[in-house]
Length: 132
Image (cartoon, rainbow, N blue to C red; front, side):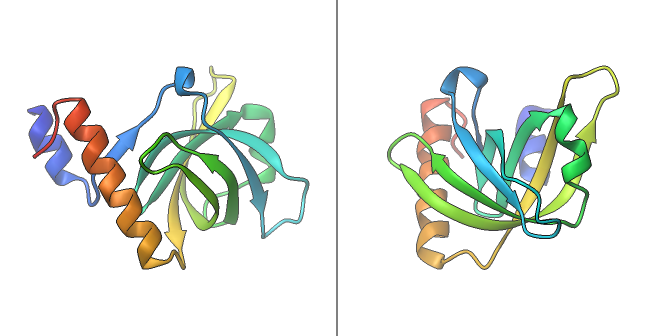
């Protein structure tokens, strides 16, 4: 399947980050009350984020949990986002990896923040030559 067709099948366009981008966040699980833990932002869209964290934190999260993701320091023009409420849609857990990844959907996000994220995704995709 062509790359453009794969992008078109997604509900929301997204901007991806690498570990070199170093966008660390703090995660608070509202459903289990355990201590906050660090994670790394992998992607962002108007619908949500994907994050990764150490596999040892798998006991702190499960699909359906509500998370507060704080201290998001994305590059300009998006810039910092203080915190967002999300719900975990899925967890990718490869038995051979030391990390897990989570896909999280935004909950109760202000329209102004959505607009800012949408503009950022547009800009990021243009920079990569993937704008459409």
